[in-house]
Amino acid sequence: MWLKLVGGILVILSSSMIGFIIAGSYKNRPTTLRNLQVALSMLESEINYGHMPLPQALRSISKKCDKDVADLFAQTAHYLSSRRGLTADEAWEMSLKEFFLNSNIAENDYEILIAFGKYLGSTDKQDQIKNIRLALDNLRQQELSSIHEKEKNEKMWRYLGVLSGIMIVLLLY
Amino acid sequence: MFKIAAIGIVISILSKVLDEAGRKEQAQMTTLVGVVIVLMMVIQLVSQLFSNVKSMFQLY
Image 1 (cartoon, helix red, strand yellow):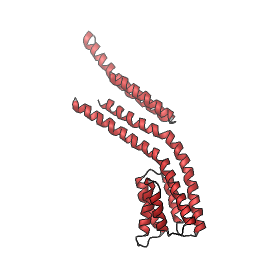
Image 2 (cartoon, chains in turn yellow, purple):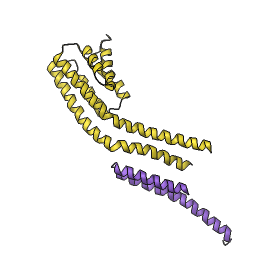
Image 3 (cartoon, one colour):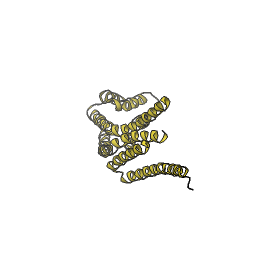
Image 4 (tube, one colour):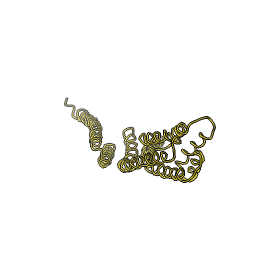
């Protein structure tokens, strides 16, 4: 009797956690996108007004911006200054892969950032700024659509998690 | 018996949530699935009832 109760509670808890985690990924995507935009516009002003080399600019941005995107820039700066002969594009892509695995951005956002990285650090100041502005515009569009998606999906997945847990327990009881 | 009522309640909440989130066809699908599950339970109970009546009256 006891064991049945404990098992049922475990099933409900675990399936509601699954639902919460899925809902959480929908909840975090707009925030991460906004932080990425802020960081990119900081990069734009660094490139426009400062004359630091790229790793130093990236490092200073990673100190100033929000926690969840700071890692991306810090890792890129680390790979660039590690003297392994990586171009800015490759370093950006490597740290972007790790960032993609650990956070909630979607496939579309990943592609925007990869396309941004292709031109990073390889053209002159004006082109870099144009590149950044392009990426910023695309990210802003993605942010709007992701807010729309979040409102549709977040509550639904939370409810789905809890209710399917209860269903399973009821069917097995 | 409480299983049937509880499943009914859960299915109705699920259907409402899915419907509100915009996925109407999935809501209708789960309602259908819930009805099938409840139907199977009811059939079981009804067959039990039949066998009880049969043994009580010893008719056929």
